[in-house]
Image (cartoon, rainbow, N blue to C red; front, side, top):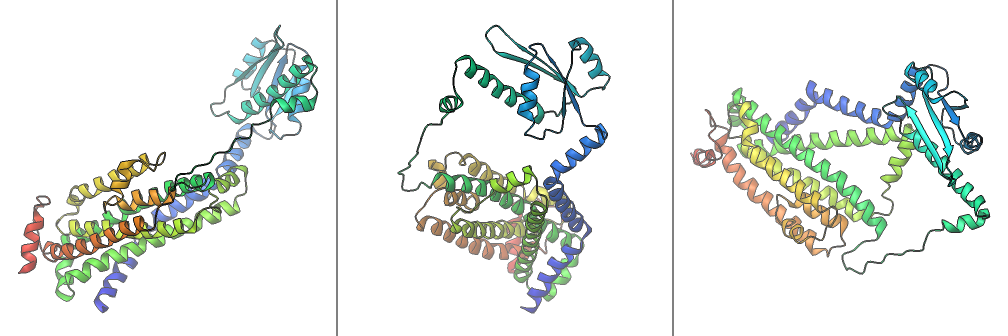
Length: 419
């Protein structure tokens, strides 16, 4: 086992110290913090670009009394913009806007049916929140005007907008509550991406590592001192541990970023990802299917990587494996809206699709215990068989040199391993 742990440490520590790994990790951590503070950064840039003066909206009120009511509606909310009434013509305001003397303007009028007409004009390409707030305020004024016209009291107006009492009950034996289903859908969606990218990135890394050692002739020295089987599984475990550590770093960075950046956006994201009502067993299944999915594809990647002698051939050789995980992701994604589709149940027992599809079903449905356990058992058996077969191919494949002809080299690798 000493040789195994030496190769394990070499695969883990060497990759950890590479510039590409460090730079990629730092860029991702920085991106997480930028995302968490995006609203603050946008607000700061807007404030800096607009100067120290507060942005101004000039309002031309043809009715003569709407602008005062609008100011009253907006007094309670900090929109970061000052409203000014003006008697200037729309043409004059348009000229001021084109010269950037004002940020925006709005014309207000009331027709013969007592309906408010508003025309908001701006040159900003990303001006979304302010027009929405203005529209909401004007809608409230419109409601008040109609209530006055119909001689309705405030309480009578409230009764017009009273929501109905609607309850939904699902008697399906595999159904979950609405809150659990929503949280499960979010968790499944996030973890599907994590599993997908982890398998794609780290499995490719294993294949590339093996091919690199072969192309540099380092493999010949390693195989003379340690068995190919130990070498393969040490690589798989070492880079797998590296991937887990990197994902944990991203998770910790994300938690710190969103905890230290308190804003409406981050609080909304935190409430969106609130899994307080989620069954903890779902999280356990997430870890299990993540690990099994990784080791299944990583073993296959090590097998395929041993068949090539040049790093340029790695992507071509692992293309079938990449297509498998892409197909699994597409199948699982189609089930987010309806996890009870028939083909999902069938594909959830196919080992190369199970990490995503069965986890989708476990997360969103209340399945009998035997279904996920059967899928896990099939995956474990597949990993064992693939490991046994992969070790035989790996044993001869690491000693094969020359151009790679495709998957036909597997037979040649097995024959070479017997010699």
